Length: 194
Image (tube, rainbow, N blue to C red):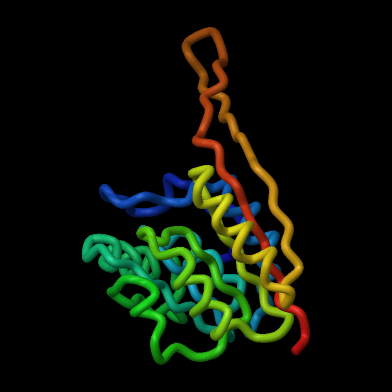
């Protein structure tokens, strides 16, 4: 199977677990700059859509997908098998506890914090290699503020952020309507050399 970034949302097997939408995945993956041998950590992996695309971009690497919901773990495994992303390890648990014992990472995605963002960022900092990229997605202003406040205070990182409001065209009989997705903020933190 040939892989192109931005797998259609319809291709993923879904349940009641949140999924990072196609257009957002494209933006996040572009900021992550994943190489073929990278070790990637996806915190709050949901259905595994981002983990799977990361695994396909790093076929000689490894992706650790952390998810606290049992249904999400099963969806990650099912979707990974569907797309032939056999370099994914789905880990059931909540961050930051589930991060214990993981190897050093080149890329870390943070898509869910369960109210533990500061602890997760601290643990992620310990795991991230020099020149590694941490990409945080935030749907609330509070998460955006906390992530920026914590990461900009850490002088070991170059931090950039932007907001995206994506609308899809929905065809209605003889007309087309813009259907908005939820706004999202993407914070990219690149770790400086030690």
